[in-house]
Length: 379
Image (cartoon, rainbow, N blue to C red; front, side, top):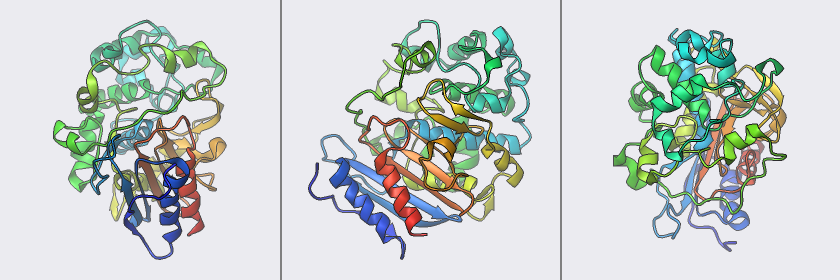
């Protein structure tokens, strides 16, 4: 463990100094390399901290504009893009996926709704037939495979089975068949780009020099008792994109898995969920649509992750996991290794923790939960 934390940069508003103390303490307790934490209340920043190093060798300081891959934390941002489409009346959560993507109806999936697909109920937690890890970079091929594949469990049984990568391909297929643009393009052109929010799905090569390098966890996360659904999701040689190198991975659009951004950007975006559809003072999504996005769509034991989980339309609800503080109505998402974004609609509070040292925790990394607890303690 590091005896002393590095210099802490940024600010904690008066009354939020304990968050800064816990942020520094994460280096003592968890041997951070580089990290950032940000929080907003009703769209106003109250915490924006960063420290450490952006590279494994600890030679490149983590800067104010360092962006980092946040893996499944990006699912919450994809959920926001889908909510924007719903607010534009291009997508209906209660419509069938096959209403927009006819081929998806094959092999017993005709009745799957958009909300069910976004809440991990489509039975497609992974690709069942062998393929190459590099095949994920061929979007059209993956869409054909998902459209043709039978569900990995009987959909009549209900319940969720976490879709680590395929979630994003299903959402993106719906976006492109309705709006005509990919999820990454929607973020660039409609949500993040016009407002200078530093988050990308499909990170331009021009931004790669400021990307932090992630350091893999010391061991594989514990998935509990294995089954074919979990194996398809995580454990097959082709379960996640690979074999193309870091540059191509960053440039590709995997809306479930390779978003890059800063903590302040994710916190700002999560603020739309925390503030009834408003991004700062601006109405981005109607109150009714954001409520529909956050509403519980399924809860109970998940078939892939070894937890009782509650999902909205693309966001994880605090109920069951209790990984985002004491408020049941919080929504958010964790990412592989420990990053997270969260939104509390009761307090108008949003926040995000990002880092480059990954740990083997699927939900509720202690570095994030300590910061969230400190944040709530300041309210």
